[in-house]
View 1 (tube, helix red, strand yellow):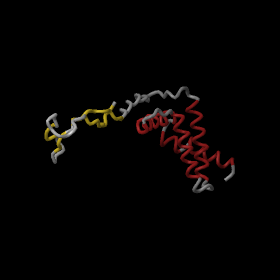
View 2 (view 1 turned 90 degrees about the vertical axis):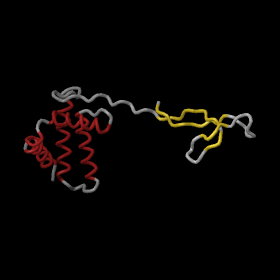
View 3 (view 1 turned 180 degrees about the horizontal axis):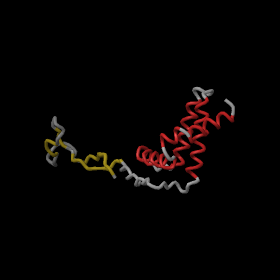
View 4 (view 1 turned 45 degrees about the vertical axis):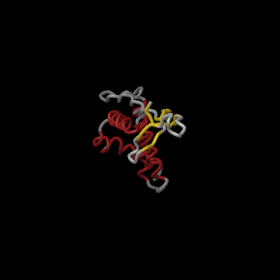
Length: 148
């Protein structure tokens, strides 16, 4: 497949049946961006959808570099990506940008004081060791996992 055939195949795909099947690329890429943003937990812009789809096609070409459809698809996604990117700042009418994901709580360790004493089989403190016992009653410092 030469360059003219590749570009013609891309043109036929983006302006033909795929346009009818998937609808307006700005709306479709905008919706994909919202979905991917929720899945990934980071904001994805509609023009980045085109870049990621091109990346997918490149990864497929590493297995079958002579597959003409993948080359045509890359040209098609490049054309659609240019169209979507030139539409503005990534804001697509009719598509709501997802809210920022809430930050995940940090997990750390916080020191806690535990009195030394005899521990019963269930792990509970059976009795405190006091001054009358023949054991040092110093405080054992332990840690527990906490959310910050």
